[in-house]
Amino acid sequence: MFGDDDRPKKIAAHEIGMDLSALSVAELEERISLLKNEITRLEADIKKKGSTRDAAENFFSKS
Image (cartoon, rainbow, N blue to C red):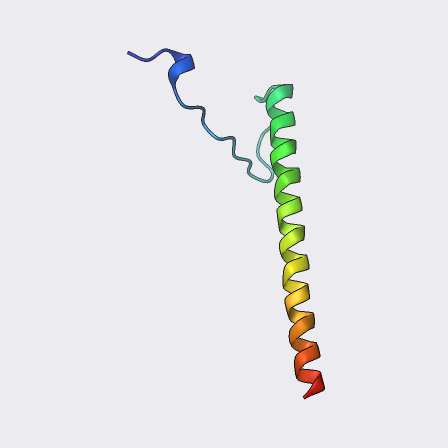
Protein backbone atom coordinates (compact mmCIF):
# COMPACT_ATOMS: atom_id res chain seq x y z
CA MET A 1 0.00 0.00 0.00
CA PHE A 2 2.56 2.62 1.13
CA GLY A 3 6.18 2.68 0.08
CA ASP A 4 8.81 3.23 2.72
CA ASP A 5 9.30 6.81 1.51
CA ASP A 6 5.58 7.60 1.92
CA ARG A 7 5.47 6.86 5.64
CA PRO A 8 5.88 9.70 8.10
CA LYS A 9 9.37 9.83 9.53
CA LYS A 10 9.61 8.77 13.15
CA ILE A 11 10.99 11.55 15.30
CA ALA A 12 14.34 10.52 16.70
CA ALA A 13 14.33 10.18 20.44
CA HIS A 14 17.36 9.86 22.59
CA GLU A 15 17.63 8.13 25.90
CA ILE A 16 20.64 8.85 28.09
CA GLY A 17 22.95 5.82 28.16
CA MET A 18 21.29 4.06 25.25
CA ASP A 19 23.27 1.73 22.95
CA LEU A 20 24.60 3.77 20.03
CA SER A 21 26.16 0.94 18.04
CA ALA A 22 23.22 0.54 15.66
CA LEU A 23 23.06 4.24 14.74
CA SER A 24 24.64 5.69 11.63
CA VAL A 25 26.87 8.77 11.67
CA ALA A 26 23.95 10.80 10.25
CA GLU A 27 21.65 9.56 13.01
CA LEU A 28 24.24 10.40 15.66
CA GLU A 29 24.67 13.90 14.21
CA GLU A 30 20.89 14.35 14.19
CA ARG A 31 20.71 13.37 17.85
CA ILE A 32 23.55 15.75 18.72
CA SER A 33 21.62 18.53 17.01
CA LEU A 34 18.42 17.62 18.88
CA LEU A 35 20.26 17.54 22.20
CA LYS A 36 22.02 20.87 21.55
CA ASN A 37 18.65 22.46 20.74
CA GLU A 38 17.21 21.01 23.94
CA ILE A 39 20.13 22.35 25.98
CA THR A 40 19.57 25.81 24.47
CA ARG A 41 15.88 25.59 25.35
CA LEU A 42 16.64 24.51 28.92
CA GLU A 43 19.21 27.26 29.41
CA ALA A 44 16.72 29.86 28.14
CA ASP A 45 14.14 28.61 30.64
CA ILE A 46 16.67 28.77 33.47
CA LYS A 47 17.50 32.36 32.52
CA LYS A 48 13.79 33.25 32.33
CA LYS A 49 13.10 31.71 35.73
CA GLY A 50 16.13 33.46 37.20
CA SER A 51 14.88 36.81 35.90
CA THR A 52 11.46 36.17 37.38
CA ARG A 53 12.97 35.22 40.73
CA ASP A 54 15.25 38.28 40.71
CA ALA A 55 12.29 40.55 39.94
CA ALA A 56 10.28 39.02 42.80
CA GLU A 57 13.22 39.37 45.22
CA ASN A 58 13.69 43.01 44.21
CA PHE A 59 9.99 43.74 44.62
CA PHE A 60 9.75 42.19 48.06
CA SER A 61 13.06 43.57 49.34
CA LYS A 62 11.92 47.15 48.64
CA SER A 63 8.73 46.72 50.64
